[in-house]
Length: 112
Image 1 (cartoon, rainbow, N blue to C red):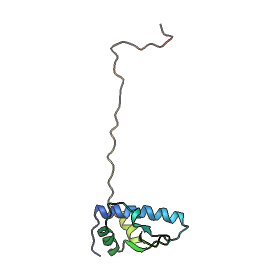
Image 2 (image 1 turned 180 degrees about the vertical axis):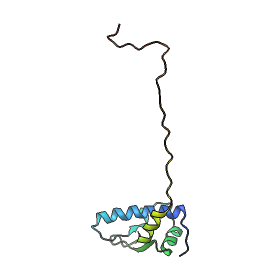
Image 3 (image 1 turned 60 degrees about the vertical axis):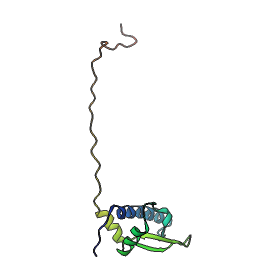
Image 4 (image 1 turned 30 degrees about the horizontal axis):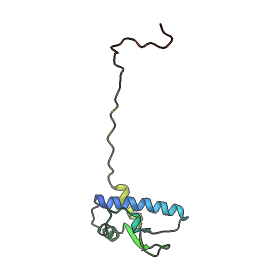
């Protein structure tokens, strides 16, 4: 199948994976379809229809509310894992050294 995942597709898969894992952990392995309003507002109908056409997600009816919902499929999980992730920039290690004091050597309370 010929498809190219964009950042919005990747974001939709990431959010669906998180929500599906959460729902699966609560429901003892029952397959619950994630409601549309639980997804980010930036995930549009075009993105969801693209992913559904590529068989990366599946649509179904949420059993609690009777409204349409979505689940990520095994193909969607595999594509999510192969998507190149951004690596964080290594933090600079600043080595601070004490500066010489213009006042002289520091004295403690009991020093004379």
